[in-house]
View (cartoon, rainbow, N blue to C red):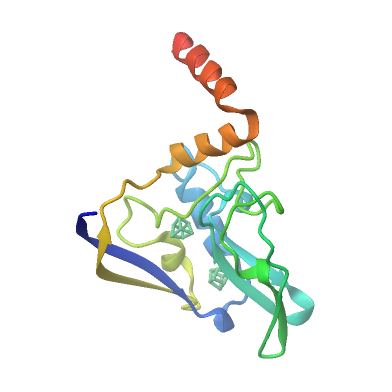
Length: 176
Ligand code: SF4
Ligand code: SF4
């Protein structure tokens, strides 16, 4: 397969500095509201802080790929005396938890690195330097990326079946 040069954007997480202020969740949900900045609801954020106040645990995690089935990950990790479940680090939008699902529709959310913005909004708003934005160039295979609409459609097909989704799209296009 042909290779192309691609700008890879990443956000490094220095979790020890996080104090759980949730500014990142607020700005992410506001940036992705329609119209932009018209509302905010941290439940719609594509970054979530995994929290255990008693253990002083604050772990920022970004929404990743949609997964139609839950995995077998049940391991525990102890890091600096704090216990983490394997799921705590996982970015998947999977059936075993409500994380990274649009609260009204249940559709999966995915971090898009704030497409259209110069730098990711959560990075700008994190005053504790927990989130560090980095860019690098890499050679990658030239495959089409699933955008948000395709991810949403794929999850609807899993839930309701292809025929029902096709019927709904046909009905909607008649109304449009
Ligand atoms: S804005 Fe920074 S310090 Fe606040 S919760 Fe998010 S990552 Fe943690
Ligand atoms: S990079 Fe943008 S889309 Fe991703 S979590 Fe941060 S604010 Fe949300």
